[in-house]
Length: 80
Ligand SMILES: [Zn+2]
Image 1: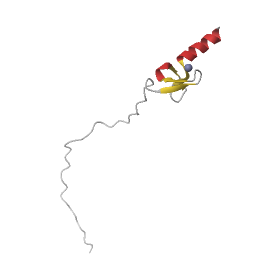
Image 2 (image 1 turned 120 degrees about the vertical axis):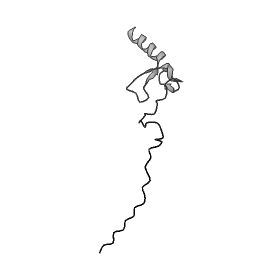
Image 3 (image 1 turned 60 degrees about the vertical axis):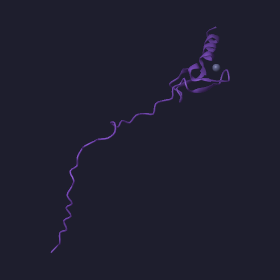
Image 4 (image 1 turned 90 degrees about the vertical axis):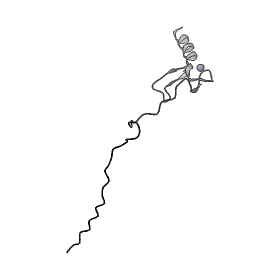
């Protein structure tokens, strides 16, 4: 009794003609080069380019709190 409705639309051949796009990779956004960054040195109270700072992996921005100059002076003072 059941009227089976068959809706067979001719499935067009799925042609894998062109797989567009490059392979998707979850690429992390490239971190800003530290040389392009500016950072404030809390010791000499200057805002300097990132290249003047050493790197500190513990820091969020990957840069040391002080510029290299200040670290140098600080180390010297310590060792003196
Ligand atoms: Zn400094």
